[in-house]
Image (cartoon, rainbow, N blue to C red; front, side, top):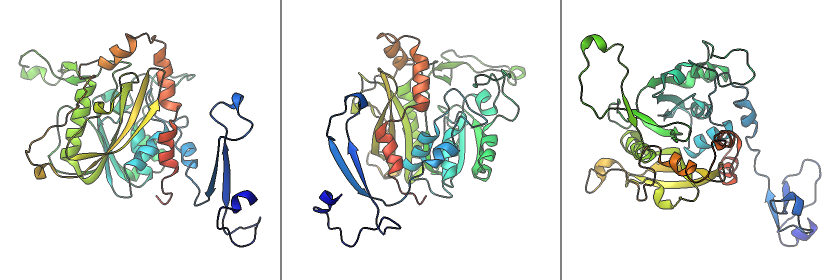
Length: 354
């Protein structure tokens, strides 16, 4: 510290008890602890500004959560996404692929009112087999649902509701109504992504309507992402943010794979490596203008390099290039636990006043 003081304008006496300013020194020896050099590669000096919010990771840990699924978002990443969306109290936040509602928990922590939708009625209502291991009950209990999780954390007053709906079919009155959209779209890796529809033409008799189960079609990842941007353009408030995950095969990725729209500007693009072949990118966009203000209106969202337009395109890419079926387990574990340093820093460096 005495050596560092020669280069910094430090004035006043050293106080080991109750100091006015607190400095930290970090020495970086590389990423491999077994091959650390004798001297640090870099030395970082910083002044303490405020404590972080790491305690929230433990408070909202999905290991302690009552209602979870196989793809429930890790608490750290859910909070990061809320932070990237600039969530503040009394905002209205929407997740169109809500699943078990982990992203709603993160947004509600910062004081937002939350709602979501999903095509899977069993997940929303907490029906079917449990996702927990080492439990005597094979099926979910009656109280396993998103509202129960919100109540568990004292956030029920911030929970509006969830809808069962197909995202490809708009059910909303068209008007800017959401302050931010935070979501984790389906990737199509573990199972095919579907939307309601059919290539056949037929009529349903009136007596069959109540029991009718709609036919489904494949829903390509490229179409999901462009639909997501279109939805954001129509239903986000001006300067509202869209925060979502975009999966890619690592060997395929180029910046041209990120969907774009003239009403949305790219704010951040951070990679999280999941396996040796697959990663996903946390994409943050901000609505910078209204659709009616565009020259040449209407304009549609598009992807310059749309490698995943066909249903199951990403899945076929991953499994047809040598990755074994065992990687599904690896993918699930890494999705829920591995943290990319670039993404993590976005959260830890963010203001703590929220």
